[in-house]
Image (cartoon, rainbow, N blue to C red; front, side, top):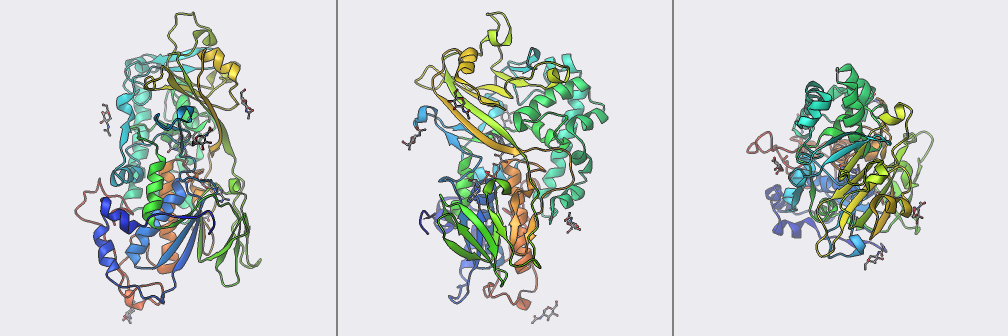
Length: 536
Ligand SMILES: Cc1cc2nc3c(=O)[nH]c(=O)nc-3n(C[C@H](O)[C@H](O)[C@H](O)COP(=O)(O)OP(=O)(O)OC[C@H]3O[C@@H](n4cnc5c(N)ncnc54)[C@H](O)[C@@H]3O)c2cc1C
Ligand SMILES: *[C@@H]1O[C@H](CO)[C@@H](O)[C@H](O)[C@H]1NC(C)=O
Ligand SMILES: *[C@@H]1O[C@H](CO)[C@@H](O)[C@H](O)[C@H]1NC(C)=O
Ligand SMILES: *[C@@H]1O[C@H](CO)[C@@H](O)[C@H](O)[C@H]1NC(C)=O
Ligand SMILES: *[C@@H]1O[C@H](CO)[C@@H](O)[C@H](O)[C@H]1NC(C)=O
Ligand SMILES: *[C@@H]1O[C@H](CO)[C@@H](O)[C@H](O)[C@H]1NC(C)=O
């Protein structure tokens, strides 16, 4: 247990914060757990959105089912959050932190929205703050510029959009996005589908069309103007997923456009994930790299770390993109194989953060006269390349807010496929203060498909990030982990994440306490507020 740190248990946190299942918790804990109950042990690999929320869902599920479960969360880094993490300009923690990875979630992201409010985290309303102009750059020229009053998150009704793209294409596209959001909200309801593999969910949501076509094919068939999908929609798929509309499937294309209620957490989105983990009562094993997961002859699993520590678990949940983990999976015998996770390419993204006193990018770089006001947000389209032109050197450039207090400098964030050199920064911004570069395997490449990685790898071995080639966001990783925890509890205790009224007396599981407390959907909450896993 070297390098490990036990985070405060949920019981102490419960006094300070509003937790809706508190009633059940105190009720449940009045049933003494006899000391000869051997807890079931679960390992979670990864403490990002997926792993931290898996720990949280397990804490909910064990309360609901009255079982005794010990959870260890292994994380190779020293922090919670994974691809959701912040850095400070000049490494000065008195300045506001900047998101280095995942920066935005939306109101339809019910788990994150709800978690933020339960954990008393303060959200920034990005729609409100957004006063920036947006330019759409094709590598050689701006094909379109919009703003300054509408900005990135609110462009549907812009007059300038209507002028270039007509009214019907933006309207129809918006309707497609709204329909997609309406469908996806069913996964927060008590009747949510439970899926053993992602293909099953695609069928249950009736989303085959979304998954089997590229975004451009899908929008073309819906009669949406080519120019609109190739310029505006593509700007969104490129800034959000580093992929073009003729590469990325239509579901992720639609997700790129869902910006209603765009928000982030003041001080960093990672705080949601820290709270998930802390409140779960799980043991956090930071700076601990998992090397091997192997099955024993009794069906249990061992987890071996780089320092040679070995622990035995009943279940293991892998909550990281498998091929990036370097983990070796070893079945006990050929007769009990572990499902193969096919290779999954990720988009390799360069994030460059910098400070500069220059209020706008240099017009000269964009081949415009010196007095031109270049938009403070520049998104890109691949349409220039498709007609034989030069590729944009970046996916997006954006100024973030006003000057940093006490320093006459702005913050700029750049996403690109390649390293951005100091010379390039000087060319575009003139004087540059602090620069921070980070490379991520940011999100999967998302071509049309109905084949997804397996979720259930073997009895007791589960894979959350099978969900990522379907949708890759912080929120959907928390949905995928909820489904995995539900499946694990079904598989082993016959109760899902919410517990389930069933024949408790008939249950022979030693993990059951005398009396099991089942959480029922709370009728008091309106359907709109109900969030499966939180409210049941
Ligand atoms: C630049 C960027 C911008 C993004 N923007 C957004 C956005 O605005 N909104 C949004 O919702 N999403 C966004 N995303 C996507 C989002 O970050 C991911 O979908 C989500 O955070 C993935 O969470 P995860 O827990 O599945 O994976 P991760 O966050 O990658 O967590 C996996 C964890 O596992 C750990 N790990 C890996 N291997 C091992 C091992 N062998 N042993 C122990 N630990 C291991 C890793 O260190 C990591 O902490 C963005 C991503 C990037 C990179
Ligand atoms: C930032 O500051 C922290 C704390 O002082 C320090 O540990 C870290 O090495 C610094 N990072 C960089 C990149 O300078
Ligand atoms: C954010 O601000 C916008 C614009 O003022 C407003 O319309 C919207 O309702 C706000 N959203 C939230 C969730 O507060
Ligand atoms: C997915 O799960 C469903 C339901 O359990 C099953 O019928 C189907 O065969 C599975 N598909 C794959 C590819 O595993
Ligand atoms: C990226 O460019 C910077 C500045 O030119 C350089 O210091 C850094 O090593 C480069 N990184 C990579 C991965 O090439
Ligand atoms: C177990 O459940 C069955 C119905 O499934 C019921 O008939 C039986 O009485 C139960 N046994 C006990 C011991 O309660």
